[in-house]
Amino acid sequence: MPDHSRRIVIQSTITTRHVGRNNIHIQLPTRDSIQVLSFPIEMENQISALVTAYVGLPLGMFVVFQNMRGLYVTIIILFVGTLTEIIKYMTRKSKYKCLKRPVGATDCDISNSDGDQSGKPGFPSGHCATSAAFWICVLAYIPPLYRKHIAVVGSIMTLTMMWARTKKKCHTLL
Image (cartoon, rainbow, N blue to C red; front, top):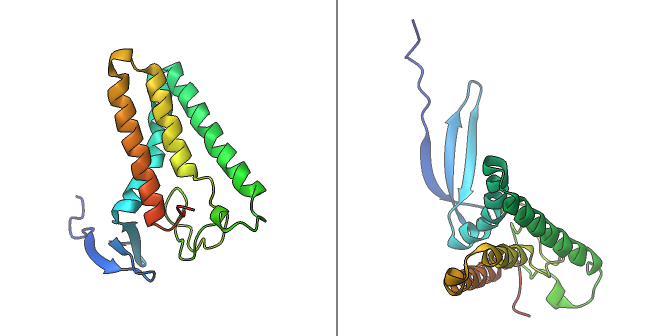
């Protein structure tokens, strides 16, 4: 007979993180301790996290449906991401401040969790480049009838990504 006396209780509260950002903390009791999962709730973090969908959607298309276009788009997006990282590496010793992340830049990686990034290379934005590459690839595969609409949506999404990355202080306008 199963023991129904033990229950797992998930308790969620909104608290303030040490850097002043709101997070949802979920406490999961385990046998010996309590594990706390933390998720940021700011809009700029959610928009920045869209970059995972830009990689995951085409990869999923390839894996699930064996759609070669999904593989091509995934390769293009990974190439763009790699290229931005190479450029950041090449400019890491640059004296130009516009190539560096501003003071106060935190949690600028794909998972919004890499801590203080002030003064580290930040140009070009991998998030914005990935967003633009994704929407350009979508345009290439969409029937001509819908291209204007998709171009508008893609432009808005990429501009929104630029706003979010600037709002997070991961990038500057110049």
